[in-house]
Structure formats: structure tokens, C-alpha cells
Image (cartoon, rainbow, N blue to C red):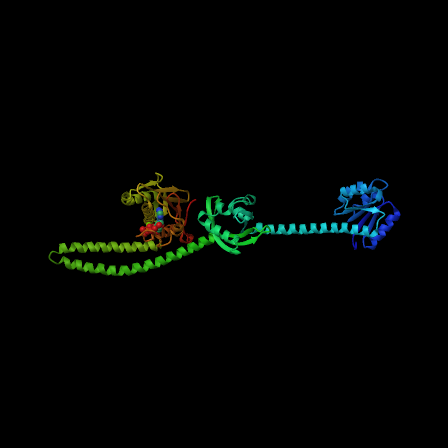
Length: 507
Ligand SMILES: Nc1ncnc2c1ncn2[C@@H]1O[C@H](COP(=O)(O)OP(=O)(O)OP(=O)(O)O)[C@@H](O)[C@H]1O
Ligand SMILES: [Mg+2]
């Protein structure tokens, strides 16, 4: 046993006893400070010491009165051992009750006294070590927390039921719910988009059930933003970790990949549109040549027939074929123009007038389907700069789709909503709507759910609107709403970035 490096405060007024105690303690490597009165002891107690040895019978007061002050004084942790005559055992017991570490009865065995001091010292040092360790732990926890709270990734800890145990600030910022309020919330039920919930639950179950240790998974979350409810795509990396109570928690870090996915989608769409354009141009060229040939040959035939007897009778069917060929030729040109529009001829266009004209053109088809088509537009003109024919074509396609989607007795509306810098034209129907999976593909060329559909209508609308510097959005909620936003002025080509429409269910 050694007291090496220990600092001991000895409070005893018996010189002989104190001197021998001091010697014993010093021999063991302790440094000893001595006080003979309560007053002196309190003064010395301000300095550092680890163990105090206090005689209960002091000249100015009982050593018991020193106990609380000795323990509280200074800045360190310390223990007090009391020394008393064997006749005053009650005092000794009272001292221990009042917080002394132990007592030593006089006359004492030096070995016993030393081991008591050593034990008290050990106690003080262990506590000191625990304090240092917990301070270090707190510091490292604070560092980790700062890291967790400053990363842009969403960090979540979920329990085996998928409830949030911990979340970082990024998760709180995206969901709009405070970190504290996220705890206990079911992530799947509260934030994950309905269509992605089952898959998310499967991933959590597989991790909790031990089928996988790690899993990656993307899901959409629905969050409230300045513009109302909207969706974000989050790409998650998840790991399962067993807790001390044997339950399994899922640690998930997620990145918001909404913009990246949107960019990928636009790129795919532009590639497909470009492919359609090339295909259409090639096809139109191939068709136009024989058509031209047929046209010329018919002119020859027409002239020869004119010189014959009964030429009038023969001339009639030739003229019919002639006009059919002309129509076909225009159709090919139109198709080429729509599938691969290169330029627009902008002039002042009244969108209300266009909307009313389109309704007129669609009236017969709508009547056959027993669908009412109405225009909801201001009575005064809503003028924008645009290509009248192309805008007409956009609205015709949209109203056509709406009528085709509607049920007998249904209604289709074209709403014209002017704004300061742009005008929104919304075509709504009360048909069956569009499934979320189809909604994602609606602008893809050749995507059609109709037996005779080309699937080019929406793709063409999209590129025509993009040429005007506008945007298209499709929502499907109680029917379908297709929104076309057109700027009042057509931006220069350079300003029209390759903008694609977006389609999503409104929830
Ligand atoms: N208003 C709507 N209601 C329901 N589904 C729609 C609506 N508009 C478009 N769609 C869906 O989008 C698909 C693509 O539309 P798009 O106009 O591009 O082609 P289409 O109508 O099928 O063919 P086409 O326009 O050549 O006749 C449609 O087949 C349909 O499934
Ligand atoms: Mg269509």
C-alpha cells in the first residue's frame, strides 16, 4: 500500500500523536498539512487535499462541525476520516452518518489507519477519474452532435416499429417538424408517400428481422412547404444495429435526390423527344417523295382525261384523289412540324379567344360523348405573345384528352387565369384520372393507354409549350388537371432552357 502523491490534511491538537501520524503518512509518500484548531483547518482546507484525518475532540469545537465544510471546501473531491477515543464510538458513528468516509478509534494500529486512508484516497481518485471520463464523453458527444446537426443528409434512428427514436436537424428542416416532436412519430405513416409505404415497411422489417444488415432504398416523402404539400425523393442507406436491450434499431441516412431525379427524367425525355423528331423527319421525307410523284402523275392524268370523251365524268374522281393527296401531304408536314417544332411565329394572341375556338372545334366530339365543355375566362382579352396555331394545337390536344377521359354526363373546363408575367391555362376534367405510375410517363412520346392512341399528343404539347418558354404540369385528383403556364412574352431561344413539364398527383 502506498499513499504516493496523496495530500492529506491532518487536524489534531495532540502534538505527539500528530507528529507520529505525520511521520507514518509521509513515509508512505503522502504530503501532510497540519492544523490544530477548527479555524486553522478551515483555512488549510482551501488548499488542495484529498483525504482529511480529523480528531473529533478539538480545543475550539468538535471536529464533527468541520465535516460539511471540509467536504465542500476547495474545488476538488475529498473524503474525511475521523479519529476518536474508543469511549466516543457514538460520535464516530454520527460522523459517518454525517458524511465521513470512516472512523479510526484510538489507540489505533498504524497499518489499519493507513489502509483506511488508502481506501479513502482510492475512492476520491476513482471518482475523479469517472468525472474526467464523463467530461470527455460529454465533449465527444457534443462534437458528434454538432456533426450530426450540421450535415445536410437526413439522419434518422428508427425503432423496430419504424418510429423515430432520433432525428437530426436536416430531417427536422425538411419535414418542418421540430427534432423533439419527431421522436415517437411513425416515419412511414406520417411522411412516406402512400404508394411507397409498403416497400419502406418491407425494408425496415428485413433489417429488424435480420435478413439484411444494410439496405439502400429510395422513397418519396410528402412535406408541407411554402407552396403547400409537395414531394421529395429521398435516397436512403440503412443499417440495422442491435441495442443493449436486444431490440434492433434502424440507422438511416438519407439524401434529397429530387432535383437529380428530375434532371435524369428530363434528360431521358429530351432524348426520346429528339429520337421521335429524327424518326418523324425521316418518315415524312420518305412519304413526301412518293406523294409528290403521285401528285405529278395525277396532273398528267388529269390533262389527258380532259381531252377525252366523257372527260368530265372521269375528271371528277381524279380531282378527289388529287385533293386527298394534298390533304395527306399537309398532314405529313403538320406532323413533322409538331413532332419536331423548330420555330414559332409569334404574334399577339388572345388566349380567351383561342380557348373559345377550341371549344367550338371540339363541340361535336364532346356532344357525341355527352360531355359539356365550358370556358372559364375573363371577358376582356388575355393577350400573350405566341404562335396562335401552335397554342390552338396544344389546347386541342388537351381538350381532346379530357373529353376522351370523361364519362357521359361529365364536364370539361378550360380556365384562363391571367397573371402579371404569365398566364395559366388549365384544362380540367372529371374523368377517371391518371394512376401515379402513368402520371410519371405522361410526357413520354408513344406512351398511350388508348387502343388507337399514338401517345404523341402530350409529348407534342410539351415541346410546343417549351418553345414558348412555358411549362406544363399535370395533376390527378378527382379527375385530371393539366396546367399550361405561358409567359406573357416569348423569351429568346437562349433563355428557354430545356424545360420539361412535371406530373404528380396532388394529395
Ligand atoms: N385528361 C386525361 N385523363 C386521363 N388520362 C389522360 C388524360 N390526358 C392524358 N392521359 C393519359 O396520357 C396518355 C398519353 O396522352 P397523349 O395525348 O400523349 O396520347 P393519347 O391520347 O393516348 O394518344 P393521341 O393523343 O395520339 O390520341 C393517354 O393515353 C392517357 O392514358
Ligand atoms: Mg391525346
